[in-house]
Length: 281
Length: 281
Image 1: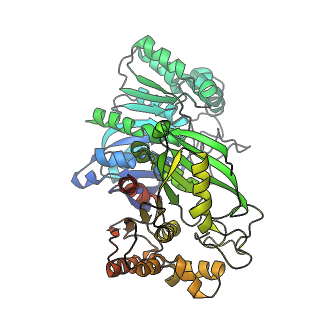
Image 2 (image 1 turned 180 degrees about the horizontal axis):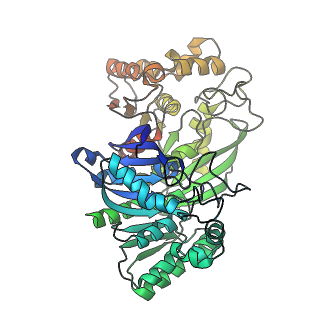
Image 3 (image 1 turned 180 degrees about the vertical axis):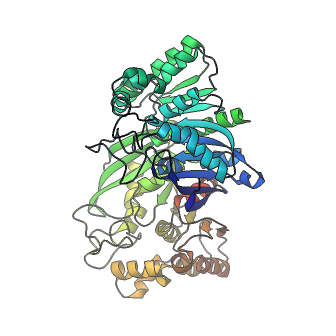
């Protein structure tokens, strides 16, 4: 369980670092990015794990969200993994689709061939990455989780299924009900097969309803009303209904005029980091 | 003098917009980006012009600097041009060099063939672009100018030569003395020819010394001490010496640990925008 430093840059008094490591869960070499705030000089700091969306690597959020400013103020580490296994040995979609295969791991453990050997992003995010980070970096096991789009789906699913491991959950423009929308159906049938009962464990709306409102961490969700993917792929209304049905208390904000881009994330990431910091205390 | 809207995104309550227009100065179609803060609802706002560095387009600063947050608070427009003429009809460096030709206009008016028909970025930034912006957008003629690296050179040169047109000047990691460093010598000999007397009008250190400290707008300059280009290409010390020699009062800050990247710009852009806002009042 070692990591090697590939690049380090100073930003807002802290350090933005890119690491490489051999993942035994994903069976490949992975890169991830970390922001360490100045407060690591005084000891371990809590962490917000950020799960990115389709086509992204660890670099999109690192360079475009402007999250380091507030993380430096609040003393939060940011842990920013890639969105799928990588490398020449990892199978990819035969047609190079943007929404399946590399860059589109959907944070599930694949059970189908030829994906099951590498596409185990759920276990990577829940177990291997935090263990690696906490063993090698000045980062505590006080964790929150957030993400965008496919990564918003990942954050909600992972946070809901592991409520003792995450103090809070947040999401931007998440795919809230993947078993009912084209992106989710394509990914889940590919990675998990045609037995739709296996899909339910990776659907935030299903999980929230099944929770009956018990052991649900605090949730903050932002969704832009001018998001081109809202109507067909994101379908926030399913999560709103589930939240009301079980009284889970998630705060769900529809934001007029905002689209699916990183400009939306940049605008509201401060709210999300302050929300997580207050729950990590 | 018309502009057409290519893309618009909401960010921090304002609008990030990409425009296209036909430039009569550059003899080609150009794109530029603008951030309009929410305050345009109440009338025209002052503008900070941002000049980008080598290889950039209008998109780098727009997506990576995080400038919109503070610009929205202060009621500043951001005007973000491209770094050279563009298009298939525009000649480029034969070897595709990153530091000459497209993406590397160096904010000069070329006098040499085959560059002189298109490579007139000085006139574009000083005259055509502000006229276009002020005729078509809710932006006043209260202007400040800033930039990074090659664009820091451009901001200093343009601000110093047009002190009545710019309330203040700032620069990140600028090439302060291009006539004395490899990037500048290559660009100036290509665009301006071998007569080095023609180069002097585009050298911020030469211009600052020649000013004898008269009519110099307020200047803020930030330079990272861990910048790989500092020793060979940027040579901040020349500008420091000129500033002291003529008593121009430029504020020049060496920033320990910071490199040449947008992480450096993101860290200090707030200071620069507050500096410009105070001078634009």
